[in-house]
Image 1 (cartoon, rainbow, N blue to C red):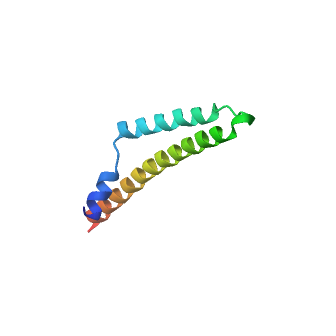
Image 2: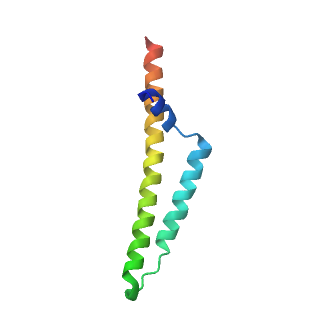
Image 3: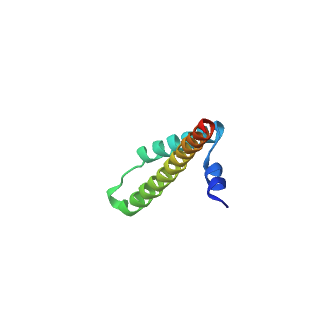
Length: 82
């Protein structure tokens, strides 16, 4: 794939972004609702790490889409000025 194809593929539509935002909200709620039990610290730590990883991944996908969208729009604007 070319760099342009990769960049275009990173741009998510509004529905896709909405789904990712909703997923991120649901996961954040799950993380907030985790029960800490002193007798089972390992389980809590695993669940918290898993949910944190999911939040980071979703944030990365959302940020990458927005960044790619800005770059494509800027390239189009510069192309139109020439």
